[in-house]
Image 1 (cartoon, rainbow, N blue to C red):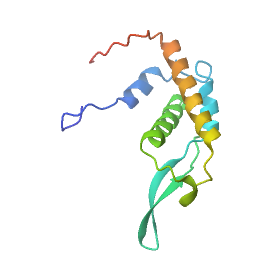
Image 2 (image 1 turned 180 degrees about the vertical axis):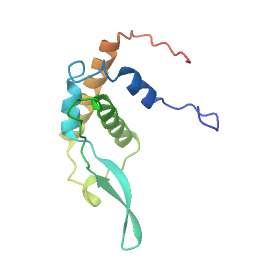
Image 3 (image 1 turned 30 degrees about the horizontal axis):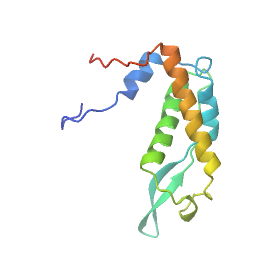
Amino acid sequence: MDSYGNAGSSWKKFIKKNKERLNEKAVPSGADLLNLSPGKQVISVVDGKKIISWSHGGYTVNEDGSDYLEQVIFAIKAVRNNLFHGGKELGNIPGGVEYDEQRDVDLLLTSTLVITQIVKELGWSREFSFQQE
């Protein structure tokens, strides 16, 4: 909860608690999602004007895999944010690409598979329990 009383997510806590368990072996589709490298919309300044552009920094996992889950969660959040909040004019902004419906489908399906693997590995049932720690 933030200082205004709004509920918030605890991604850092989730990652810290589960990073050893939710590794590449347990969540293999995470590697596929990272390879798809979902972009992120950012505001850039060009000639003194603010414009929307795309950042494709890529997702890099440490050699020991210790940040695998963190990178996978960042990628899922990018897909979710683009779906619900991102601009839909990919080809019309700097760094954008021509609209590719199949890529969007691949990103959504791969993200769904990752979430399914996480739910299965954690043994969550269809009825989620919400507990405050």
